[in-house]
Image (cartoon, rainbow, N blue to C red; front, side):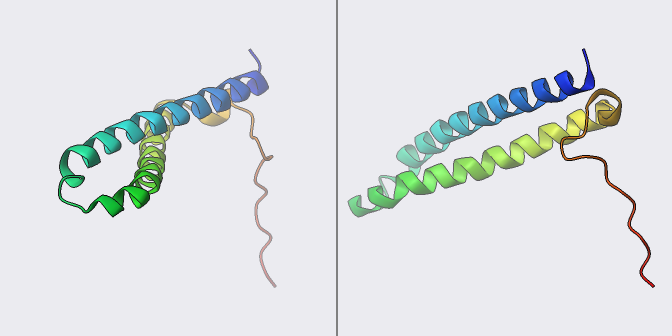
Length: 96
């Protein structure tokens, strides 16, 4: 496979992985909320609980995704197998 194909598959796989991690985190955090916090908080808190659980699940999935990418990048030479998405970085010109 070419580098462009590898890059496309990596991005698609990473996107699917990130969505799945977000969904899993959402249900885990929602279960924790309903088990521990819901009995302690007033009923009016249900109106803000779902958006808060959603935001926390997005943040949790972001940190998990970054951790997994860091582990993968330590094991795999990214430049050898993947094509840069936005082009190569050019060295900065020194300021005069």
